[in-house]
Image (tube, rainbow, N blue to C red):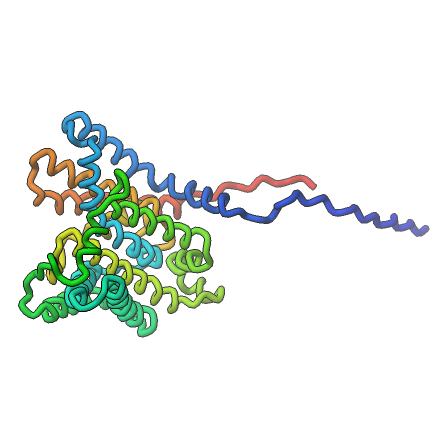
Length: 358
């Protein structure tokens, strides 16, 4: 006896809510911020603790004039830290960032007397771009390890800066050509806010949008997480590596303009603590030293943290020679926390998924 096969009844598809499957800009930014808060918890608590201590012990700490000093003093480091974040997210580090800034500053000092200020700015940014592309080409195309390349160009760019300055001495830019316009901008203010603060905030906002909402930003994270897997998915890993070092170069040009504007001079000597502080700010802010994890929000918190520490030493009449020791210790602790977090993520047992009854 044969049994009849019951007819197949097709149910109409469930209605799709409007906007389902779409991710808005606000949702992506919220997702990026949520991912940052977990990594920022430690440094944020530390920053708040230091601020509370200084507010109690040093009455001048909370004054706006003091915070303007912090903002202006950390502007160069904050600008370079934007570019360094892109590099570290790919799993690299630019050790030549301070030498690049010094060399570009000397280039600016050489051209500002003969060019209008817009052309001088373009020449300075172009010089930074060329130096960054040189690093990126050697790393991304020639496949030379970033440590070897940037350690080598650290010495090369510093040497070129001294050669270009001829005497090796700092060149005063007071009254030179179109420097006055740039100096007025760097040292000026819009209402109560220093212009360099607005410049830094703008760079961080643009950089955060690029990292969070563009295919280039997603590619940067992918390369840092697993370069080979990124290549297999169609990402041009070499182009990404060249690009992030080019970004550092351009921002070194911006930092050189700010540095020259604040000093009213072009100094060929690289600040020996600048590179350490830039890297420390990025890693303290939660960017993984192995790449693929972190955000510019964290980097900004790291910059503020180091700026507050330096300001606290000054207000407390403690020798600034201790700054390197403190920055180095904080850097070691930050990287150690990142390593522990990575290991805990490896050994953590995956959660069992709930089975859904049909």
